[in-house]
Picture 1 (cartoon, rainbow, N blue to C red):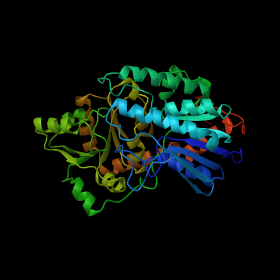
Picture 2 (picture 1 turned 120 degrees about the horizontal axis):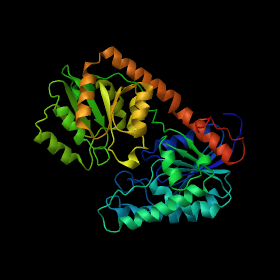
Picture 3 (picture 1 turned 90 degrees about the horizontal axis):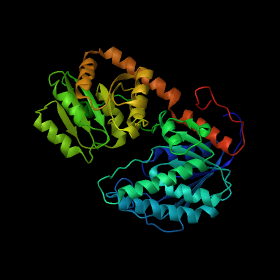
Picture 4 (picture 1 turned 90 degrees about the vertical axis):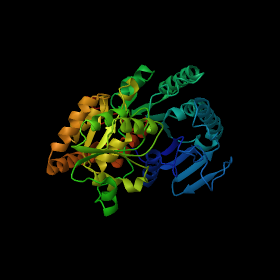
Length: 420
């Protein structure tokens, strides 16, 4: 990194390891390894179940320390993941606790990094207002969208969240966006376009790397000589996996679709597969992340699905980075940045979202591509990941933004608006 020197860095994150929060977790470790003093302000671990992990007890004074890295955990309301009101109670309670702790714990940092999810917004607004002079770098992961629109009062919460986000965007010294099109969304929400940079997310590289499938993985995926397309992860409203089931049902003698995971839409997707008589669609229960690289290697392609919603066009799902890091070729049924990244890397095939006929065509083409060409797709995808999305590349860019925010280096922008 070009020469800003060690700084005191605060990190504000709603989730942190041992939760599966590898971006703020690995960033904190890497910045500390590079000689910076790092202080993390977060909550007690409760994701994804919404209940504090066994062996943990929420209390006010809880700090852990290692060389150049300190973690302060503050209490928050847990158990509200199932409803908009419960989630907002969690967000607001974390905001209150984080703001109370921030003056002592983060008051003398040179720059603050905020892992910016909707859950962090109220806390970021409070902490930035309290600390005042401390410059902040926001790493925006998601732009608030109504995810519970049928619930009474959700519109009120959406308005409050939007107002708080706009306030945080205006206060930030630098804003990193996790997908190219997200830049337009944050600018429309109040961010100064001159302060916005692109920093693509990385994956958990300790887990997701090229692997050789063992007998158990091969048996679970079960090719039987046919092309296997695997979707690993959430079966929810954002993915729209009904489209994939319809596409696979049209190609029952050509390929198999394996859905690994669970989610709120699982019953509906299973029901559609049964109604269509899609015997080439199989469901596998959720697996540990450490098992996934072997399962990726046992399949022929990884499927990345996003519905055709405005807020999803500026989003790159984490399963894309995981697949590319594992050198797995990809079939993307998505619009915007996800499809563009796959096509630019020549790492697989893509088609418009929520178009089962177009996806069936991609499935058919994927099955006709010889294994050697699939391997080459995976190789190109991994090269693109290492070059543009890896942990070292991402931390370099975040570190520079923190130095810029703290006034330690001169700002440098390339003509495309990306971090140089």
